[in-house]
Image 1 (cartoon, one colour):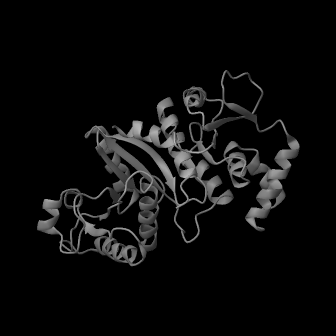
Image 2 (image 1 turned 30 degrees about the horizontal axis):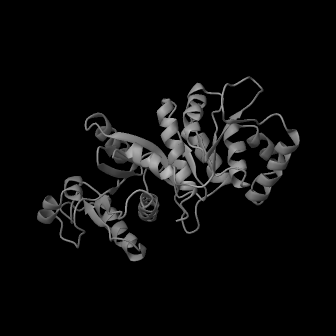
Length: 318
């Protein structure tokens, strides 16, 4: 079974879940909401800024229609920010769709947020950082790209958030990715990637990756990670036996942690364009409640798949 059908199968088992689309007036969001009507357990809300007629079975919320609610959300935002922003700053923030959506999520009116068709990643993440924040014990919010092809399934991280993570950042990225992957695979097998395997090259960059692997393994409760390791050794056990000196799991790694954003972003696009892999994401990980960012070039089916992932995250209490 291909991944997209597996995804639908998982979603069909979920309880009632409410997902909001920030770009509610974009035709791609409207078309996605109509496609998602096949899932009786998903309640989709389109966030808009006026009362223009939209042909949809989804809920439609005009954020500018209820001034009292806007003021209430602004006050709650000030409370969340604990003195870092005053009521005027809150009102200004809540006049934008990303912040309005995040406050609906923060107050429990919805279970997850998807947006970015008309907003930058920075717009979406800034609102998520301020209104939602990271999970307890996590300081680094990161992203995962789900790479799928026939029966093959990999999780690439980080591919859109942290340009040059430090040791603790890499550990958080790996934890975020592994915990997310548990919703789809029985055993996340993490590999910390580098251009070196087991000290074949010694530089500050390779040492950072090796040290991050050690730190990750001190606290992670699942299968211990390998690293620092080159990609071929990570996904081919035979190559790994000839190059990697540390203890290892059987089979191939399925959670690939890249040393920096350049490697991760280029890596997933190579797999997608040259390898024919489907790419779903970026999925934001490490946030207390599910928030996901769409590329401004996303197609309707990209929106659909991201909503399905978000619904699964909303019901995954890891």
